[in-house]
Image 1 (cartoon, rainbow, N blue to C red):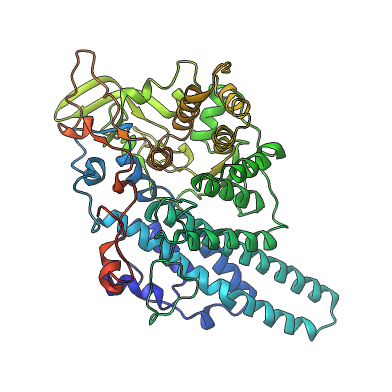
Image 2: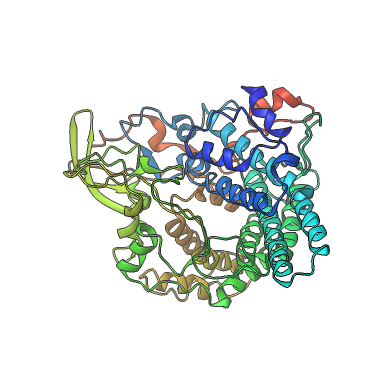
Length: 527
């Protein structure tokens, strides 16, 4: 298996084949066949297929283990009594190791996509442009010349898409596996391997954190050159310059570069292209149930019946008749208490249902329904049960709400007006504005608003790390008679992890260390 995985570093894997393979949700194997770049990328039509492959791979690196690992490690979920230890090593922290298959999957699949992108960036697309330019020089037909010009323009946008995707993957690798950014030590702190040209005989080494972020921002600068003609509009399904700005804002916040984080977030807010929704139940349900909202900066489209993403359906886990549920993960009471009754998100994120575990029914319990799925993509069962929610919905890569939160946090730490962006988001979620607060009280409100807005989307663990906060599991839900039998009987429910624990950073997968050697791939501390 190790050698099978590492073949992705030596030979270009055809993106279309890779995409369809990943859509099958088997994340433990790799394709057994590959196609050299000089045979698969010769014409404009080939380039268009490769670009579709870039987007397919991007879609298949959303949801699933790319989100759930850090969510299971965070403070606002409890394991149910029927979770069968799925994710238990993450939830319990202690037994999680560098040999964890889910962690290795995330690492390997980001790098498998990067290998393709490097080949496309390093001459793959440009070679097609050169061939079209040669053909263009040999014709005087006006219609043909216009066709060639249009093709060259599109392929340049494909180059921009490749640069953007590479920056996105490297940020996500650094976010999980690199030393958290510290300006004073970033030049020497261990990041991840920064590989821009793959050669199977190359000795891969971990780069520094600064090298990783330098590549991210350089790639985004290149992407911006090529994507200027792609429209910036709400609900976009194409990489564009607003998506670049959103990724910069996210990266700058992680780096604690608050001046730049604030500036990038405010560019998106002040553009007016992504107005926050009206504070109504219908609007928030449209956002999460029907994938329809003005707030989407970048999303990934799905096509019913043919395209899927790695589901997070284990939160909802509806039985066929939908009269009871058996989710693996239950929101804590501490989390539920963060949502005021008038908060419109409460209706979209949670649902009161009947649970069923160990032949016992538990009535009136609250589960996570934020990812129950879009009815358009529900599983057709039969005429009696109807469509079954399956967790399939369009991934929302960037939403303007995140930028209001980035602006608020960055403003707080750079002595700017943090209340204005914070209150604007609160108002559009049905909450009253805050006034007369500052200092720790204001920071706590910013943290709580970020928790409410981005719950279950993969941010919480890394937010706690950035703030230097501990991971203290919140108070569990109970039945009306005080029972917690629907929860796993373990110490997970009261787990406390001190701030600064090294396991806030994921381990470098052990197979990577075995192949390249400890001297080239030293493990993160604590693993």
